[in-house]
Length: 266
Image 1 (cartoon, rainbow, N blue to C red):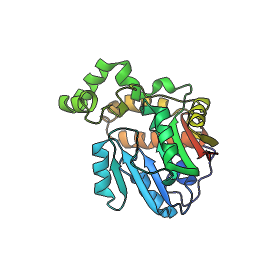
Image 2: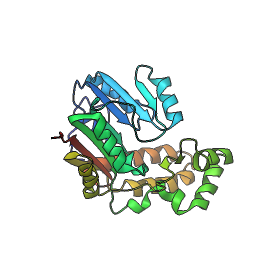
Image 3: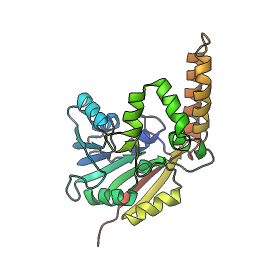
């Protein structure tokens, strides 16, 4: 990651740290699209943003956000467009690792453009397309559905599998749109084209990691084995955490980060 994080940044070398770094101090209103439990949104209080708003399609996520942060405005939406806000309502917007889950990407970005003020900041993060993209565990349920079902049912229950992957009330397969059915990875050129088409000018690209998907897969495979050997599991976890932090600091391919501005309409 090339971005130099300030000492007061509450996040590390990840998408949250990058987004927090680029949100303007003292903004009038910020929207976090796909806010989940609003933990990231809550950290923007320290940047003096007057109004903090989050939206998410997941009922469970919105419930958690309401329970944890009663002072943050969190709204459940039933579809990605349209949003219940007026034109130019926000001075900045974040959409962090969301677009790759959504089928109507251009329509969503058009809607974010509508509710963002002219020259407002948009921070977008997505999985980057690179050498180890094929190791993305998020696509195992689509590549090997029977194996995924067998494993999930062993770890959880049949009812939980049915709720999350078959009859999800939020219209998702896990956390991915039913229409999308793929955890997409983007090149910088791909993301720039999407943003250009929706009226945004790219300001900066950055990213983190290179070996992270390989590290995660090795950790996943070794974890159950070494957890049975007394004294090995915690040192192994600590070793992998250090590897992941080092990978995020040194490289910028596995996760793609972007800052853009809304083009003023003539």
